[in-house]
Image (cartoon, rainbow, N blue to C red; front, side, top):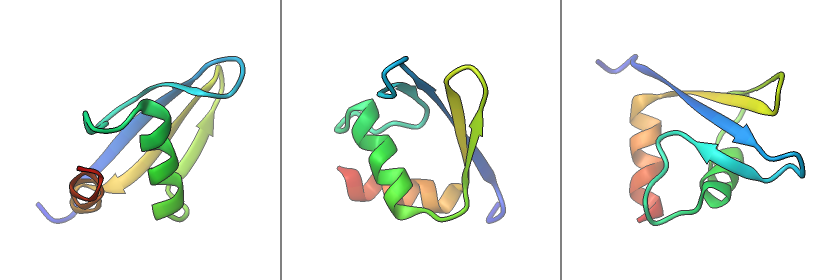
Length: 70
């Protein structure tokens, strides 16, 4: 479906670096994937408590970003 939304969960270390992130291409580190997502998206990022956050993106956009990362 074209309207499928993907929730990409992010976990941060106490120093602010990304330790875990969903949908990550194997060619990128967790921090590099986070940096790509934040630079390529607008208004899709939500901070949560406990050193967590999430991106809500259309599946098609996630697939395009993954393709560009390889």
